[in-house]
View 1 (cartoon, helix red, strand yellow):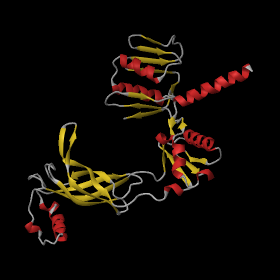
View 2: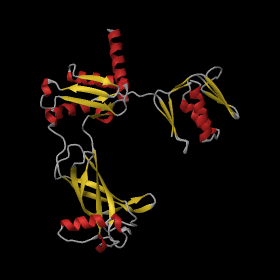
View 3: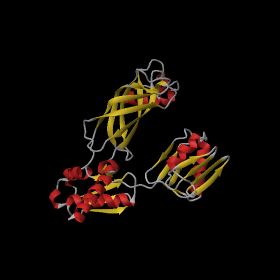
View 4: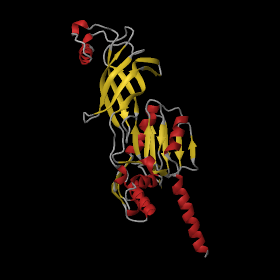
Length: 336
């Protein structure tokens, strides 16, 4: 009875540790086919107060074609105005977009216009990579802002485009779904498949590779694809990743990921001596330019100690690279 109680306690403690690092499946994976699509179009902004393009070749052809569709015959010689600017219009089409819904739009000048302030975008078709028109944009523009102040050659149209066609088919009737992990990892993929199978009480999920998990809809969820994914995406899974140390050379910022270990190593860099393991007593001892660590030291301890000595970011990176080259840093080292 006592042994059984101890085992129960260990199971509870293990579950608590795993849940402490767990994430919802919807936060670490995406359903294949459920994504945004980029839209782009070429448009003309009118009504500018003399701040448009100075070169007519950017806009004259477009204005001529537009006026021709409106029944007015003009030639390029008749068109000379700095109140017009040529722009590229971009937008993000969300998954399951429906005709009649609105999209936010960004317009960016491609000529030498000095400002788009106060202008109006004329009806502009927005196409995806398949060259099909999915939305049409039109309306008054609002100039953007940046960290340095007003940036008047880029503007926004909140809700300035209207979707013209529905996106996505009959999603609910699908009987197979594919999940793609944001950070591919064999261990994470195996955990995802195991967790889904436990939830659905059967062999319905299988990991194809480090970044892909296929799911077959159970009979109880036939014709209920939305309900199935709602159940699956709420599951808690503990993601696993390769140990990594990221260093920003410009700022000297060091980010140490989970599971980073360092083996016994001794390094001399300039007038700095660093030793991990061996005869070091206690967690850490420091001389003038001598740092000794015991076997339990990690990369974070080393970085803190080196920073206290006033070592430059460049020297810090060199030291970490040397530890990595010696095979003592058990992690990927990424320099930004």
